[in-house]
Amino acid sequence: MTMSMFRLGYTLLISGIMVAATEPSSSAGTKIQVTFSGSGFNGCFQYDQSQPKEAPHVFNFTGSGLSHQICYQIGRGTSVCTSGRSCEPFIICTSVPNDTTFQLQGTLLGSTKVLIVLPSTVSFSPTSLPFCNVGTTPAFQNTGTFTVTNATTGATIFTGNITATNCTQSTGDINCSCPL
Image (cartoon, rainbow, N blue to C red; front, side, top):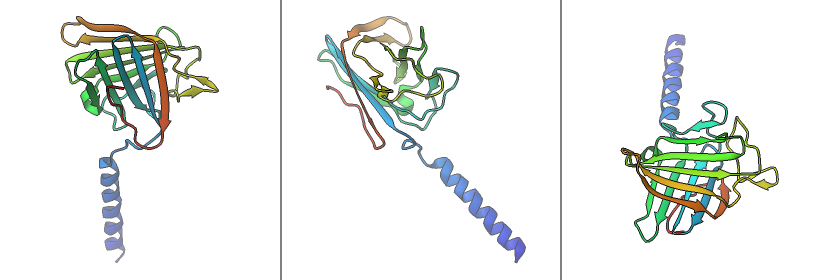
């Protein structure tokens, strides 16, 4: 009886671990979505604020089950929108060149790289990604740069100045879409 109870408990434990390992963790934390625009382009990116740091000020979503997404549209061109593994590597740095700059690098569908740089007047934490506000100050403050390059050759496809941003956060699902 004791041995069969032990086997049953062990089987249930292993089953629970397998279910936990296969469950998507995209609902783990608060989703942050930042929309941006400038002359001739618009877009948005989204990330799960609970992503652990890889190193101080570095948050690497590559291989993570947590939400991450990039969408953009240049001119009247086709909207590009990818999420999860199709926009990896997806790395956020909050210290390039100092702790008041938010930088997102993503490779979309393996063919294009996107770099979004948003300077701020707030200092970002080295251990956690920002919410929409740091204290009472907006983390994303309407200026920056948006660059798209060829992932193979490095040739610049587009570069523009971000002149407007808007940040929303939610514990539920939010998804980027273009045009904005």
